[in-house]
Image (cartoon, rainbow over all chains, first blue to last red; front, side, top):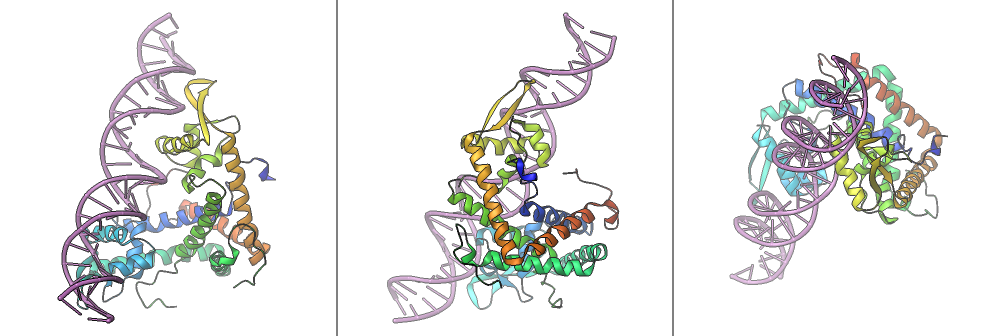
Length: 163
Length: 163
DNA sequence: CTAATGTGGTCAGGTTATCTGACTATGTGC
DNA sequence: GCACATAGTCAGATAACCTGACCACATTAG
């Protein structure tokens, strides 16, 4: 019905995903800013997400985040300036350096964790735990389907089994 | 559940939304690039999404997309260079100019529409139409909850512009 | 009919988050 | 110990946004 207007992809699946994602992100980062971490932006979560207690190499972090080492270096630099991580030598490899959390960085990780949990709890309370489980399940399945190469482009010749 | 490691927010709800969203987007834009529209990037959909057959004003497009007119002008400029839209005078207002689709632009809109439909059909075939309806419903509810101000954490005196 | 005010759009310049390519320093295998 | 791979930096570019200042034209009030 709504497909009569050729410009109507406002409610494509993409838009349906993007909008709540943005809202969620805005909410969590607004809370974090209010908790004393206004300098940390969504992109920096790529650093915090995979960093190990003993420190992680830049290249490894970049790889895990799916970006170039230059981009990761840029993000890390910002976090160093604001005292969330330090860069030290890697005892196992003289070329490498290790990025590790400072205590402020650790406090941020905790704050991020609990901010995101609070929003999830709000949603769970409003929509029901069952709906949230459903949501995660469907999103996970979606990911699996979209990562499966034989489902790619043009015309898929055969329909493979899901999961 | 695995929350012992403080760095574990890899499977936050945010990540669960972001990953399939990115995959979806990559898939659709890869198809569009393969169909002869490699110059169009996700951001440009903000232009195509709301443009009317008789042309739309820049300011209106910017408003609908929730961005500044300067940003919209930047996107439109790119599309003009690649022949997807033209900018002409607005017969009703000498100050204003109208952005309208060229036939190439119309062809792109059709291609985008069908690429996105194909992916949705694939997902529907793999996950079931019911799951897709569930997904959209939950995402919609999530949006509603997250846009409701009284659900906001602690104290949030400021409210962003409604998109 | 002008004058004040409001609106459409541009110009100039800045920020964030990415990228590529070239390079240096170091480690590793033979 | 040399060839090559790897960790990271430097330089520079790009995409997609932003704010503030401004001009051209429109509308409305007197």
